[in-house]
Amino acid sequence: MSYKIAIIGVGNMGGALAKAVAGNLKGSTVFIYDKVFEKERDLIRNGCIAVAKAVDACKKADVIIIAVKPNIIPAVVSEIKEVIKDKLLISIAAGIKTTIYEEMIPGQRFIRAMPNMAVAVSEGMTTLVAGMHAGEADIKTAQEIFSATGKVVVIKESLMDVATAVAGSSPAYVFMLIESIADAGVSEGLSRHTSYTMAAQAVMGSAKLMLVNDEHPGILKDKICSPGGTTIEAVTLLEKGGFRTTVIEAVKACTKKSRDMSGEKY
Image 1 (tube, rainbow, N blue to C red):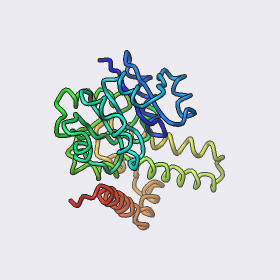
Image 2 (tube, rainbow, N blue to C red; image 1 turned 90 degrees about the vertical axis):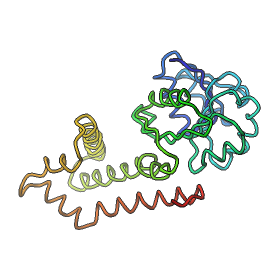
Image 3 (cartoon, helix red, strand yellow; image 1 turned 45 degrees about the vertical axis):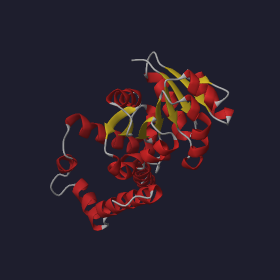
Image 4 (cartoon, helix red, strand yellow; image 1 turned 30 degrees about the horizontal axis):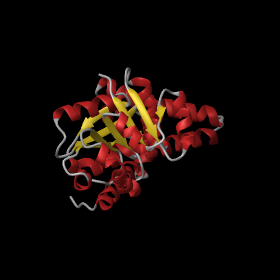
């Protein structure tokens, strides 16, 4: 199905989302607005249509995605609320619950989304939460739009903070892992470019192998760890250093921060 979509704010995440949707959701039209025109320039070359005002973008669309920083959400909503009441509103702002939007625009059909940066290469992971007035058709619309950018799951809002930590923020952890592996490769004589390529491809291939085969990660790990071999030597050292415990605690800390931002305690 084709849609007319307005994306308000095309910074890092909004821009990545706009590019992926415009490139992959065939037949749809993507209108974009940002106060900084330089952010729009590349997206215009990728098929998006820049509009002079946020209100004008919303008037042209039937789905509006707000992709601005959380602190300016109230100002943006105040500006556009009179022209979006009969349309589906989606926000990707972290830490702002559906009830906050429903207080700002009573009766609004609203969905909260949390994509990650991998939407830029159409391999994103997006979690969706439906607002009080969003129906099944609205959820389906959001699923179709974000499926153009990668995988999508619908969850309860009480789980959105942990979803933020597990999916939204986790590319940062993965980049740190890639960088660490590559640094080790460089220290042992590999060129920087070669080491980054090898580490990144290993991460991407490993993730795809797990998803395609639908196997437990522990089983896949065991398949690589030959008795008395090189891999189990490395795994043993990682365990001594508290690798898994550190990752778990990092995800839990990220979850707590997200809950603090939204003022929730679960």
